[in-house]
Length: 206
Image (cartoon, rainbow, N blue to C red; front, side, top):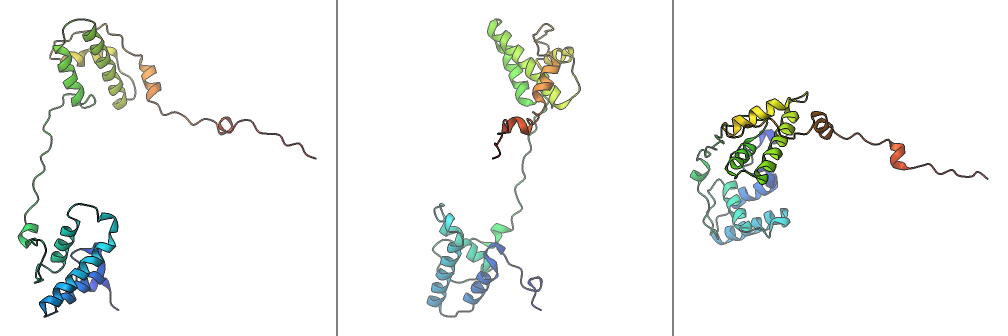
């Protein structure tokens, strides 16, 4: 039996075994003009496999690059583009730099820390008062999202003082009740099917 597991591994499996066989055959053609014509025919067939990509920039360029890859970079034809070099695919991947932000309280997030720092810069007045109250309420909501049980307002006041590096010391903010936040965070229960369908219509029997 001829199993795929016994065959040569496909460099680009998305094109299938038949396309790979065509590429292998082109490499056996001795006449250069005939080889160029056969390569162009394969490119047309490859393009027909993904017609929705034809409007993408450099689509043809990608097809010729794929042809070179499937030919193991050994196909001697007149490429309309500079074919890729094998060394390009031997380079190790670039290291991905991870965020190095030091977040004091992860359940609040880095964005809230930055907003607290910005709130400190506001001049004393109604606008600053409203902003601090909103931030404190958001902190309480975020805390309850991660810690489902409960939270004391004093915990929020203390964390706000820590995040502001001691520049915001408050214990009199108007914070939402814990039960109200938990109720808003709870998933809504589906209404009774009878309520959504409405009252049943009574059909008079004749």
